[in-house]
Length: 113
Image: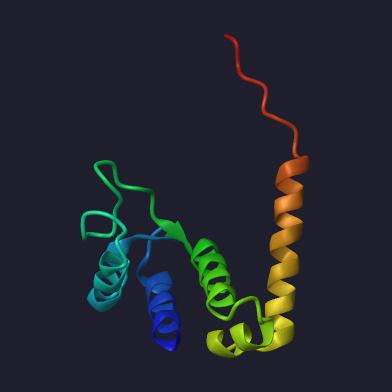
C-alpha cells in the first residue's frame, strides 16, 4: 500500500491538469495493473482506452478494495491503508455525501438549438 501511495504522490507532481495517466505511474505499478487483467497490458481496457483516473478516484478505489479485502472490517482496512480509523470514517462520509449530492442534482436539460 505504501508503494502505491508513493506512486500516487509522485504521479500527482508529474501529471498535467490534475489527472493521473498510466504513463505518470512507475513501470512496476503499470505492470501490476496489467497483471490484474485490465485489458491489453498498457493500462487501458479493450480497443478504446479509458480516460485516466483522478487522484480522488484512485483513493476511492484503494479504500473500497481494502475494505473488501478486510471483509468490511474498517479498522483493519485503515491499518492496511496506513491511515487512522477516523480518517477512513471521514473519507467514507464524504464519499456518501458526494454520492447523495450527485443523485439530488437535477438532470441537465439538453440544448435544442
